[in-house]
Length: 336
Ligand code: NAD
Ligand code: UFG
Image (cartoon, rainbow, N blue to C red; front, side, top):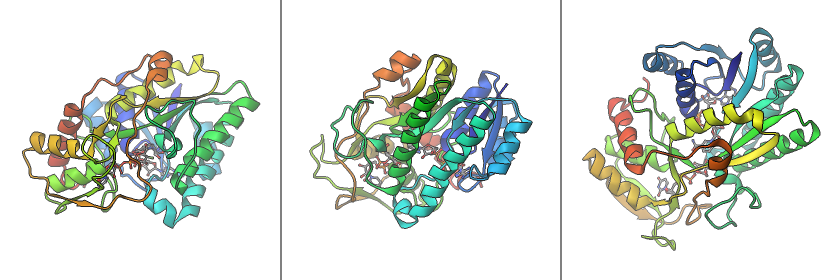
């Protein structure tokens, strides 16, 4: 029996594959390499001593996906594949709806055809929209403020409808908070294309000298120091959350939304100060106006993950930043 990992050469997928290989799972990765490279596969082998089956294919390609399920005895799917840049999603919304929503529907149709009805899906805390107060709980109303968020919400709704229509589906819809950090080997980590949108890759590229300074988006929020507060979670903890979710799928009937966060909030300036201390590098920054669409504070209530999966995040902010810096300083140009 094998696990199919869509988007498995990406940031979160590659860390999850490492944790699954440690448990001797057979892995088939499908990725179209639109935001990753096969160099990741060599690094996974270096860390684990194990190889995976890699298939370069697009989840939107029904024939290719059908072939994957015909040729491999797939038991469950962890579905990471998707486009994820919030700003870009407003510029090219159709590409996001096609890739993320149509791609997921195609994957689900092929899964149903092959009677594979166990799924872990990469959702996001973005589905809580801007009107709920943290700590965010799975039962709160959902909404979206940009096309990327809409795609996650639409896929969640498709999954709820699917599970309602056919009780033999077991689906864990994992709502990630802010994944940061890297594997402690320093061999795999986040490798954004172009100028990063997210805080941590931006800060680490400033620290390593690739970017001149950070722009802090707003210092007049109602938070500890006026800057935005988020629930940063170590990518290895997130990866372990996926392992637990796959293991518990047989106990899940229907589609279950599950927050994966630490339950703690950290401000932008707290991140900058920790990064400066840990890396020993200067992090020049200037305060800019608020970024459109941002809210002051986002953090999780992580009790459902604890109860249902027996999971809680174990790595603290110090480990997250130490591991980010090891990855960035050992690989200043990513995998190249
Ligand atoms: P990533 O871009 O590093 O990984 C996604 C992978 O999917 C890439 O390797 C890309 O090449 C592949 N891919 C994209 N479209 C594809 C398609 N049509 N067919 C096959 N492969 C395709 O991103 P990540 O940070 O690892 O995110 C993984 C998932 O988690 C995404 O669905 C993302 O939306 C979700 N998520 C990420 C974050 C975050 O902050 N990183 C937060 C919440 C949710
Ligand atoms: N920030 C800066 N400067 C930057 C980048 C970010 O000050 O250059 C601030 C933001 O204003 C925010 C905080 O740092 O206060 C975190 O911003 P990120 O862009 O790293 O993360 P977001 O919380 O905005 O968004 C992330 C993912 C989304 C996901 C969302 C909810 O990028 O895909 O978390 O989980 F939807």
